[in-house]
Length: 429
Ligand SMILES: Cc1cc2nc3c(=O)[nH]c(=O)nc-3n(C[C@H](O)[C@H](O)[C@H](O)COP(=O)(O)OP(=O)(O)OC[C@H]3O[C@@H](n4cnc5c(N)ncnc54)[C@H](O)[C@@H]3O)c2cc1C
Image 1 (tube, rainbow, N blue to C red):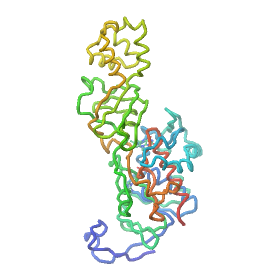
Image 2: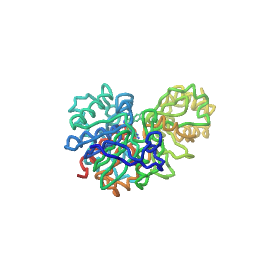
Image 3: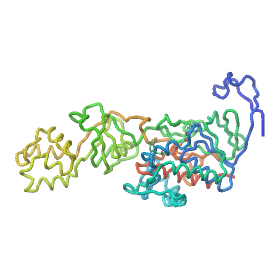
Image 4: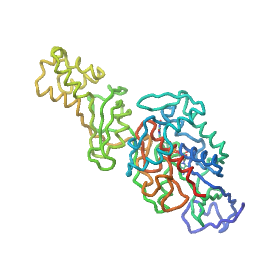
């Protein structure tokens, strides 16, 4: 239905710039739906498809030219789409219980059933992480098909200029159309990787409607170091080894995070699953602690009679790549020396170095390298059973834009699916 929409010439909004609008009243078309979803990523596509299949008329809007880009690049191109062991313990949030209801209503098993229905073959890689055998594009195709089955109208690339609430309806103003619906879902994700369309849209909309936002920061992100952590870090770049890693002892926000994962040394510092996991718990100024070797296993080995005549390097390669074993021995000046020759004090220094290595990161590699956003729309503002705003009927926030951040391993996608599902099943109409 076409209608006239009044433009406010004094407003600073982009929508009302005089270069675009020369008159106070401008001709627009107004289209009505049961649901408008902004953001056609993992959560938005899934939510729109379900709502459409439940008989709702759905419009899905995204500003990106290509849809599902984050899904496409995820999991090294194979999309770690869920985790067999996902539970509330895999998430960081100011309210650690918030995710429980959504995960109970739509679990990783439910999503696995859907993947099986589409005959997408997958495999378990590590600690319950499920990846597509072929390509992440299979998941995108599945989500698009779900939208097609729900007769979802997808509009992209289209930018939303403003969002308003009038007479119990949500009005979404784009160029050149205006859309309205009783339900508005914001699924525009977090700030990581701006090059593929990330924006702070969700946080801006939350603030516009007086909702609290937990300060966002990059998470699952490599860490940078100013001081030299090894004698010549270039020599170690590319080297990977399993460690026990921990951070967050100050318990400032999310408590203490500790993981047994692979650590990767790069030209820029430390990365790999171990560092990505711990980065979510790390706070500026704090050290991270790394046990390169299990203390019990190391002490057992060193106590054996047969160890006395072996060199330190020979002993350490039981646990570490040879280059790294040599580096640690060199740092204590005992490279090439037999264990029996090492003074008691130096022996203890070696055990401390290998089992309680403490190093202070200078910072993270930032939004371009982060996989997810920590913080977001405060869960206190949302009903955990529906993801609807407690103060604004019909306004929902789902997926990464909410203050719910998963560990590495498929948990973030599971949150996208679970939050989308509960939202789609609880629309107000
Ligand atoms: C490199 C990388 C690898 C990852 N690998 C994994 C993995 O293997 N497993 C896992 O669980 N998680 C992974 N993640 C995290 C995962 O991709 C996200 O948690 C997930 O995509 C969040 O879903 P979402 O729908 O909330 O947001 P997104 O999938 O980011 O979708 C948001 C959508 O909103 C659109 N949008 C943004 N702003 C606007 C706007 N202003 N107007 C209109 N549209 C807008 C975007 O174009 C996008 O289409 C990875 C992330 C990265 C960066």
